[in-house]
Length: 281
Ligand code: A2P
Image (cartoon, rainbow, N blue to C red; front, top):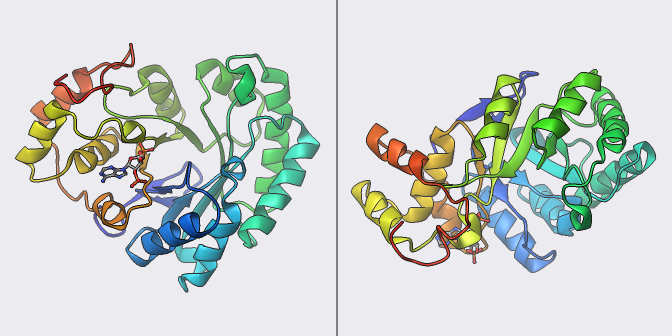
């Protein structure tokens, strides 16, 4: 990543262009050490969630880093199961306490439905939750608010009823899984798309076709995949607990050529088999 590269939200807030993802990093030493290492080595943006259970270690690593709070960008998320106005305000306070910070940079609704009811219609509830998100934003305790895993209809319901528009939508995004409809819709509404699992939770690594392309640029498949997300105009959130990978994942200051982009864009992972083996795609 070029130093000082940012995306800008609709309210003018700047977001460092690569975030350090912490999904599946356990609270305690693993989360503390990996976030501390990331911060020491150039990451300015950390993505966590109340549901990850690691806010306390993430917050401690942030505080211990010695980096001025206003130079960092910290995101957390409201658990998908909490769908009332009151629960939203209460859990936001808990997140702030866990993180030990007096403001958050971005707060997201983790999903439009509880995880064990994926696809269920929680439109009415999400509108109530969004009112609490707006209140948090207006109070100044959070610099931006948004959603995660929202599709077009989920987002439309919020846009039709809100006084503050969501500024980001965090979705699963990697080569072959670019969720075109919601990505286009979000961008049309000036909502930043953030991509979690840019390495398909690691499954993309070792794919021979992608390795051949990455080799052309003298990069790894991970770097190619992260750079690809950036060139799609989406903010990547790679996760790693391995120091050399954490370093590698932010060194993506190169340009994937047009022909290779066209090829990567043509890959479709609709049946989820694209990266189920190391075979060529
Ligand atoms: P680890 O944390 O053991 O380093 P995603 O960001 O798509 O969720 O992918 C995360 C997975 O990819 C983790 O299993 C992580 O392993 C692995 N990973 C992250 N960065 C790299 C890399 N540069 N090379 C290989 N594997 C990586």
